[in-house]
Amino acid sequence: MNGLKMDFLSSDALLTHTSMEKISMIVERVKEGNLVIIEGGLSPEEEAELIETTMREIDIENFMGIDIYTLEKDKKSLFGISKKKAVGLTIIGPANIMKTVKKKSNFLSMIANLGDSGASLH
Image (tube, rainbow, N blue to C red; front, top):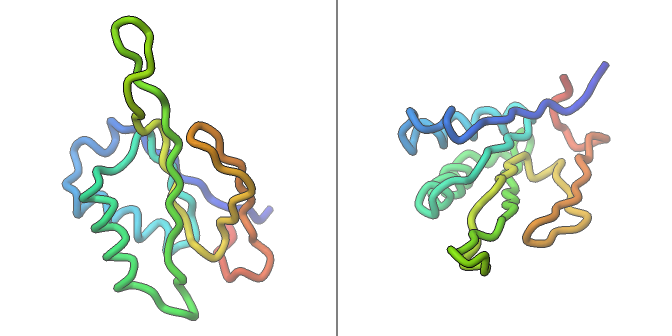
């Protein structure tokens, strides 16, 4: 059976990695055609470095780049009032297969286009 491989990483799994190790791991998995789902997210600096690294790796025939989607959740204050947004989940995948249907701050509906996208099937 062919399908899309998704790698789920807990925030604890990434704690022992340096920023560059995280970025390298993500880029390699996405270049293989996998979706990477991270509990929480990357720091703004790590996300910028991920995008920069990806731009250097783009190869029109084999790797079109990445898409990053982040779902946020409200952090509550002492009295239950919404204080600010915190990253709940980050999804990173090949740009040529990730198609957003609907995105809000706390909801994402996505279709992975496996047809003739060149994505690797597992």
